[in-house]
Length: 306
Ligand code: GLU
Image (cartoon, rainbow, N blue to C red; front, side):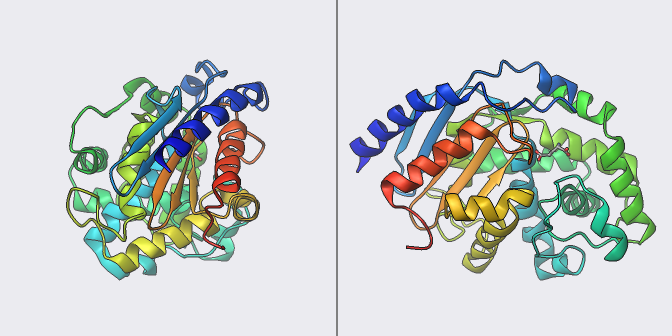
C-alpha cells in the first residue's frame, strides 16, 4: 500500500499542474494575491506513522480557514458541549463570509466553519486565553511535536486591514449578545490565526487525530472519540461552505478548505490527506487541490460511504 500511495501521489501531482491555470487566487486579502499561482503539493499521513508527499508538499502556505479546525478543537477541549449553545451544526448553503442568515437566526451562526461561526469560536478563545492566536499556534506545535510553524505577520496584517466584512459579521453577532469580547480583539486574533503558514505535510500530520478517534498518533489524546467523529461530520457537511454537498458527492470524505488554496481531507481510521494549489473556484475552494483529492479517493476507493 505504501509504495502504491507514493506512486499515486506522484501521478496526481504530475496531472494537477495542468489544472493550476484555472480559477483565481483570493485577492480580497491582498497578501494572498501575491502568491505564485502555478504551484501544487500533496501529502498523505497515515495513522501508523507513514508520510508520503509529492510536488511542493513542503512549501508553507496560508492555511486560512483550515485553522478553524484547530481553533474549534481547542474551544471544544475548553468548553465541551456548552459551545453548541452559541454555534450551530447545520450547513449554511451560503458563502463563507455571508451575513444573510444571521439576522433571521438571531446572531447564532449555522456552524463553526463559516466565518461567523469561527468568530464565535475566537470569542471563546479570547475569553480563555490572553493570546488566543498563540494558543492555536501552540496547539499546532503540540500536535506536530515541534515548534517550527509560525504566523505570517504580513498576511495577518493584510487581512486585518481588509477585514470590514468580518467586522460587520462580528458587530452584528455582538448586537445579539453572541460575542462577549471586543470586536477589535476578536478580529486581531482571528486574522492572526488564519495567517498560520503550514505545508501540506505539516497539515496532514497535524490533523491525524481526526483520523485516529481523537488520539494524535505517537502523542496524547486530543479529543474524546465522539468529538472527533462530530468534527468529521461537520467537515463533511460544512467544511467546504456552499460546495460541501458537491464535495461529499465528488470525494466522499470529511474535508476542510481554506482560501489559501489548501484542502485537508480525513479518511477515518486510516489517514489524512492535504492538497494545496492557490487558484480557487467561485465558492472559494482550490480547483487543483479538490481535483487531486477527488482523484485520490476515486483511485484508492477510500470513501466513508463504501
Ligand atoms: N481568513 C479568511 C476570511 O475570513 C478565511 C476564509 C477561508 O479560508 O475560507 O475571509
